[in-house]
Image (cartoon, rainbow over all chains, first blue to last red; front, side, top):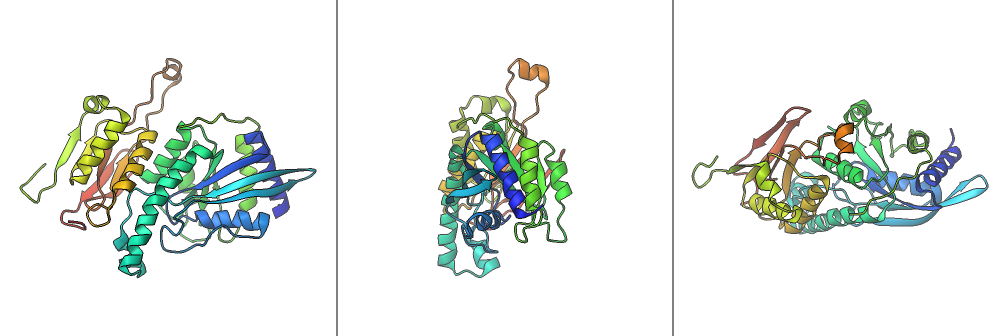
Length: 220
Length: 125
């Protein structure tokens, strides 16, 4: 399946799930799982522009970034989407890690840590303003983290449509099957946002999972 | 468990104690205790909404020199059967351990056991 047919699948998915021609999709997950890489992959495909910078240092994205009005052509019709690339959600932020493990100077590390804490709050607030979520997980890591469980629990409580992107399958140690068995109640699609591998399947699985029924979103 | 001045307090908090509190009070209580350096084992954990509220409040309290956040591990809410859903019985969150991130480290978590280690004297003062 080529990238154009992938877009068509995505367009169908969005129209079926959200029942409208404009939907806002949040990209969520813990720090350093590849959220911005995935957001950039989608935005590059649709507009030729990236959303944000990526880095090996955790909490590179510290403010939510919104890319609005991405137009998806689907035969005779078209669809507009907004992509929200959110900061990584964490329960702790230690500036000393930035100093010891990534060589940042103390002041820069403290500033980064402070911005990261604000980013976590902002990411959670954005849950009130989105129509669906792509939850990104690192398929090389243990999936049973409290952050993953907390995010999923919140999405379920709000009845928000969610699809898990098991990212980093280009890495040899990845185990997307572990993610699938950990969260059998949700569709899990192995992808590499870095290489673009399996992105078409991601879109197709969205269509398959959500079908034509639009879920009513709960607030709060 | 408390052993002298440098000891670490672990509080086992009963379901009835938690049920006396509103969600906001629960989050405030937990965060106040954890900021004092205590580790809490909650008989009944937090709902997803309470967990995200706790994370948000934790982020506001982080000061980078004395408090870097929390470590929290628990089990998702119990799944309800058809009859329970029909009767409108609310889902109950399960056992959860919460502590200051500089003291409490999760080693392993599976369907049956959460293994944590307490690292006294590490990190912040």
